[in-house]
Length: 321
Image 1: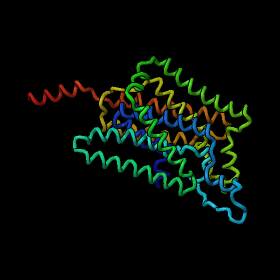
Image 2 (image 1 turned 90 degrees about the horizontal axis):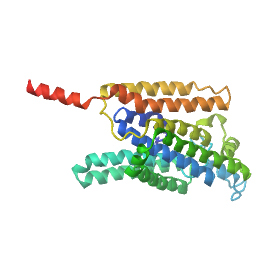
Image 3 (image 1 turned 180 degrees about the vertical axis):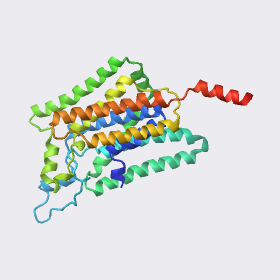
Image 4 (image 1 turned 60 degrees about the vertical axis):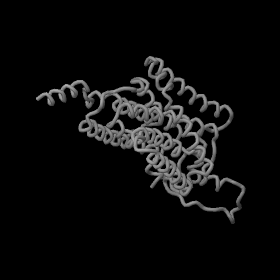
């Protein structure tokens, strides 16, 4: 349950967009933190290139054919990407860190007990996600711990006001330039591995080799697709810019609008052109994530934003009457 509920794809397509219907500023802050964290996770995974338990058990010489343990496999077990650090835990740590930081500010006036309770819930959730990931054979213990530690570090870096102010002060062209630099870093890592004789797609081949059911393997969980998805969303954030101040949203309009956009995004993803080659599939996915992220940042506040001055004038008129 915890593995599915805190899957980065589920968080990105359902939970995080809901935040866009509540507050554009919070959505922008959350989006920046999660995107940079996932980029860091992808880069570190490529550098460390560490096995997952289910194929390590079959490849290691620590066991013979007589005493080799067997892991029960399902679609969660067969993820075709390196194991360290855990992407589930790294992304969830950042996502929950942002949400719980906002909740701490709101509940701080109720005393220290409320803050302690929130932190207990925070770390308990991470604990249960770790147990779930190890139970399904997705990660080793140290990979879960490393994911949590890196997630906390990235959260504190991304939530620093200096970073957000610095990015927001830059011109749109310069922000797009930063995205291009990150893409070049990813491409350089990919080709450096090739030049060193290392197959960047080795984890995909290992997953195909040892996964009992090939239908469990999904291209959306590979590092290449992750980089495409992140770049599309980060480019949209770069074009719009981090939103530090925005109009309050009319929840009666913004929530239905966000829900409709989420449904459209899921339908569009289900109808991805998978039979027309890798280039078409990746380009379609890139444009899809760019368009919808741009929509959550720009269209939702434009159509569902409330005019604060107008609402104040209406209140003053009602009082005078």
